[in-house]
Length: 185
Image 1 (cartoon, one colour):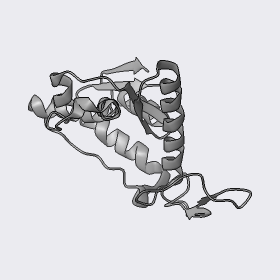
Image 2 (cartoon, rainbow, N blue to C red; image 1 turned 30 degrees about the horizontal axis):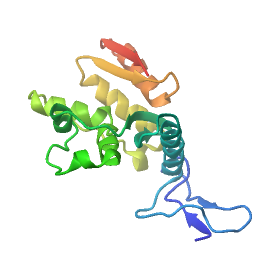
Image 3 (tube, rainbow, N blue to C red; image 1 turned 45 degrees about the vertical axis):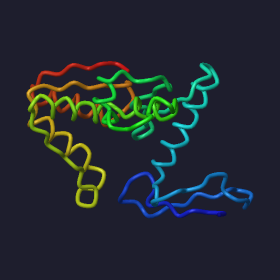
Image 4 (cartoon, rainbow, N blue to C red; image 1 turned 90 degrees about the horizontal axis):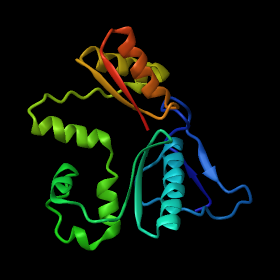
C-alpha cells in the first residue's frame, strides 16, 4: 500500500488527510483493521518508540497505552498477581502467565479502566460523558470536561504538565470550586 486515507486529520471535524512516503514507496506499516485518524498514528508511533526503548534497556517485552500523544500507562512482561489480574479484567484468561507480552499488555490497560473497575466493585455509579465532536467541534472536549466536573465531589488528575485536556479538567475544578488533587506523571 503506497498511501492510506485517514479517518480525519488532527480533529474529527477536519477534512480527511492521508499518509504516504515522500519517495512514493510502500508504507512501512500494515493496518490490521479500522480506519485510524492522524492522532491514532501519532499514538501508535509513540507507543512503538517507548516499547522499543523499554525492551532495549530492560530486555523484557513491554506494552504501553497512549491517548492523545501522552502515555497513559506502560508495563513490562512479568506475571500479574491474582488481585491485579482481576483489576485488569484478565483473571479469566487461561495460560496468561505463559505470555510475557500478554502480561505486559494486561498491565498497560490504563487508569480509566482500573478506576471503572474500582467504582463497580465498590458500588459507585459510573457516568459516561462522550464528547460531541460533530456538534461542538473543537469545543466538545472542554464542554464535556465541565459536565464531568460539575457532577464530581472531587477530581483526581494524573497530569504530565502538557496535556491540555487534563489541564482543562483542573481549570474546570477550580472554576466550580470542586476539591482537586493533581498527581504529576
